[in-house]
Image: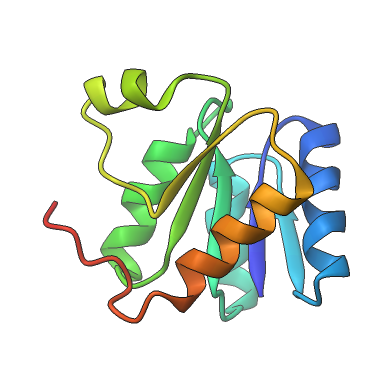
Length: 126
């Protein structure tokens, strides 16, 4: 299953629809705190997490760091309205992918498929 995390309902719904149509099981959360609670409570097996970066309570980067502590092999795709270069300058640990907003259904699916199929699980040195 995939987990889509975004405080913007429209973006979250769009991503969920696209992924469900492609045959993925999809869970959704409105921020990092809810995402972590969902993962811990439901004990769901995730193939990847697709998360917005800028969210209240716990942002996408904090979520990614929390997940990497417990599930280092889980690919994380970050969605952002900011330029990728700006994120790199912030010293953000490399997610599997950064998806610039707005993105198309095709682009979302391509990134998810690429991240899930990576055999090494993206073991970049932190």
